[in-house]
Amino acid sequence: MTKTILTQDQIQPLLDAGWTLTDDGEAVTKTYEFKDFVAAFGWMTQVAIHAQTMDHHPEWSNVYKTVEVALTSHDAGGLTARDAKLAGIMDTLADR
Ligand SMILES: C[C@H](O)[C@H](O)[C@H]1CNC2=NC(N)=NC(=O)C2=N1
Image (cartoon, rainbow, N blue to C red):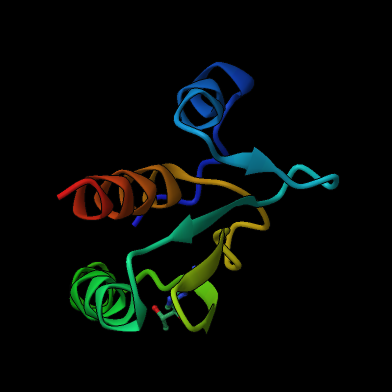
């Protein structure tokens, strides 16, 4: 598990993929919109299994078909490769 904080160059691909950097620069956020609640919760269930395998967990909330996500590495106090990896998994699973 790496605690190295990502550089601006390493964060840029996340921004290109639609993630937003928080004002403090310590997290990225994204709002996913699904077809309905079942699609949203199904996606969350798939992501949860990956998160548990990685021992890296999202901050998220769900209202009906919308899921708001924030990714950060609490132990590192900012963004790490673990956030970039989980972001990629989330985007890939949402595109199916
Ligand atoms: C003990 C355990 O490894 C830690 O609490 C892990 C679990 N999941 C985590 N998830 C995230 N997003 N940040 C962390 O620092 C973190 N720490």
